[in-house]
Amino acid sequence: MIKENNIKLIFLSLSLLLIILIFFFPFFWIITSSFKSPEEIIATSTTIIPRSFTLEHYNKILFNSDFFIYLKNSLIVSFSSMIISIILSVSAAYGLHKLKFYGNKFVEYSLLVTYAFPGVILLVPIYLLFAKVNLLNSYFALIIVNVLFATPFAVWMLKAFFKLIPNEIEEAAYIDGASRYVVISRIVVPLAAPGIASVAIFCFIISWTEYLFASILISGDDLKTLPVGLAGIVGQYQIDWGFLLSGAVLASLPVIFLFVFIGKYFVSGLTEGAVK
Amino acid sequence: MKKNNIEGWVFVSPLVIWISLIILVPIYIAFELSLFNVKIIGTSGKFVGIDNYIKLFGKSKFVNASLNSFYWIIGNAICQTFFAFTIALTINYKFPGKKIMANWIILSFIIPTVVVVVIWKLMLSSSSGVINSVLIDIGLLDEATGFFSSPNKAFISLVLINSWRWSPFLALIILSGLNSINREMYDASKVDGANFIQQFLFITFPNLKSVLFVLGLVGTLLSFNIFDIIWLITKGGPSSATTTLPLLIYETAFTKFRISQAATLSIVTSFLLLLFSIIFIKSMAPKEDD
Image (tube, rainbow over all chains, first blue to last red; front, side, top):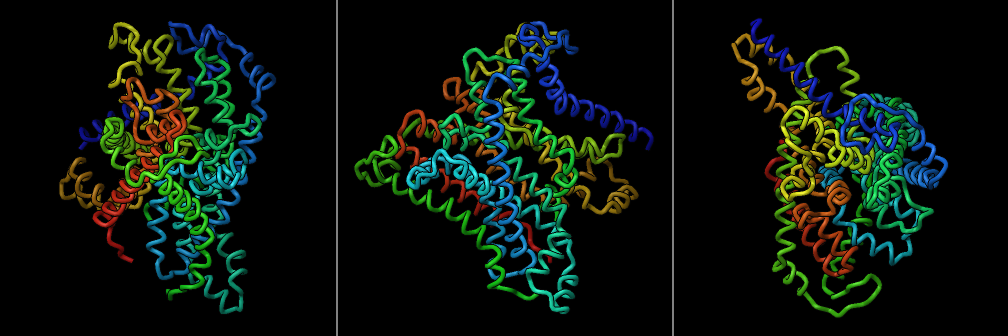
């Protein structure tokens, strides 16, 4: 008995150590590197503890680049996509999981497949469609696509939260004469608030990180989003590492910031749907 | 609960209409295009019927990309299953900092893919990458290696990078599946003398069936779809070794400007994925108990 526990303990500590090394060290590395001098970043002999400290990269990206234009575009696109996604997915999840109807299993599975389905297969067709209806080079083009990618999984995430709300509460409200609208806005939405928060952050992240469609559907520099702007630096022959790293850190900050506040709900929302 | 047919559809329809419009209309346009010979967007081409389809299957590029996609899915499935189960089983134990770890392990999933690319391009750089210098320091390598320079190394490196991004997310889903398993089953099995491996095989694994169904379906499709990580790191090279179907579609449409060919590719690929999904759902969907 004691022997088995000891082996377990060794395994546990080893895998913990490895997990931290593999999944957290890279973040430590790019953050510290973004404060290193250009020479130290590309030096052949690497040291774990930084030898130099400079703010020049941040100075350059904040005051001498298009960073704020990209940031503005990313914020507009992500917030709009998030709000539309929430409205559509809360409504759909309510229909699917609170009002059983003919065909609901079909819709549920189709949504699951759509979640994973689109991506690059739709790239050419969507490009052609948007070219036809003059939507290329607009925020709306990206919003349409982001909502398409975010909502199927959002509905899936909401499932667990909606199922947790006892039907009796709603039925009691109906007996008291409440309308469907009142039941939804006063009972269902407040009770599912943690779920809706996690859906919101999920939709925001999906839109914030989207690269492929943003790189094809937008060609004007003034409408580019952060990932596309960053990718432009990655593609250069001579990469300005300091510039790129500080950009990468700054582009990650908003999602991390959101995550600090509602990450707990996000993680539970992300996972509940799969088991319930 | 009684069925609410009309109201149910009213609530679902805005989303269903949005999604169907944005998927079906483009696919119709693509299908139409695949029957013509259009090169640059906006120009017209002549009607060629199913010529594009016939040509496609004879192309070595298509065969090569399909094979790469197949290896990509298998490679990612193996790596991610391994990483995800290791993370999930580890975090499932009690240790100080468990809560923080369980929340923040997903960091690699919430940052933009472009940032993932930046991280690994820097860490795996052949001239100044930290991985190279660590591997040399501990004696595993004699001199710095280019992780993206040979076909096999590039492919494996990309699979690992992609797994790095996705495993924590999968791990959290597995973890919540683990938490839903009744603890008493483990206690009972211990009384019967079951060891750790037997517990995993006969309690943990069977109880995760419905979670694994979703992961198998969604995970396969999502792996298939990966584009940006590969494109931004290797552009499909060296010598097309990392050109999967998504990259081939992108290249055909936007660097070679053969729109009809790209449309044909998209249609064929959608059909293959749809077929896979239907077979997977029909054969593996867990029976509903409620």
